[in-house]
Image 1 (cartoon, rainbow, N blue to C red):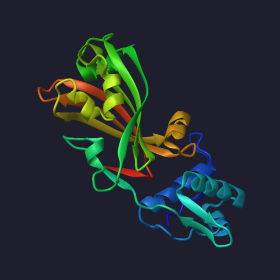
Image 2: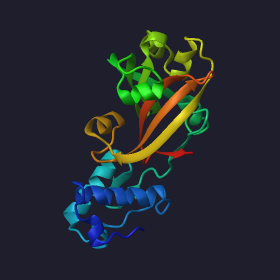
Image 3: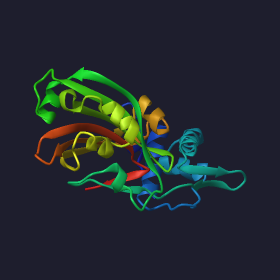
Image 4: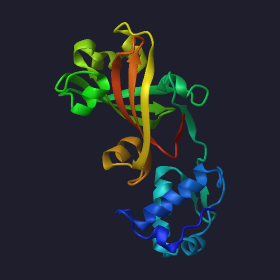
Length: 245
């Protein structure tokens, strides 16, 4: 197991000790040091490992149980509930509907909200439009086998994609909705990947414990003429999915 020194578990950047311990246990799981069904060390050994009291360890474990990463069995202990992460490839052709093929049975998207907003300088540069251009902003969440797996914010030029929200609602995916606008295929222009703790809204949407880690993909898609059509900021639960570049 990963051993944290005392300095590594001191509060840093406002991150509580129990949250850092929960993250360390998650890393043991996603790194393969703990497999599905493995029994977690007891509270006392974990408290000694991290140099904290048992109450702090108990809170970290409770969060992971609530999140579904661990399961508690009365009289037996705490076990790893799910160690397998899905793999989502990031490449020239990145599709949520295709990237998880063979790993899950059912995939679907849900539109949370849609509105018009003016392009900021950053979005204008990404979509190659003038600052202030009207963009359609969509908030969506994607599910795999009923579990929320991606929380996304997308922007499309309204002049070209008027009514895209209705098309997405009917089609249930960006790829199928784009076909309503004559775009049979498209490619990934750029992707920037980072990681951070989930915001409260993201944790609620993805059914995560507060402070869970999310992978963030900041991407732009192009039509086959090379024109930017869609800018996206997508957040994935780090302990459910890995991004493969």
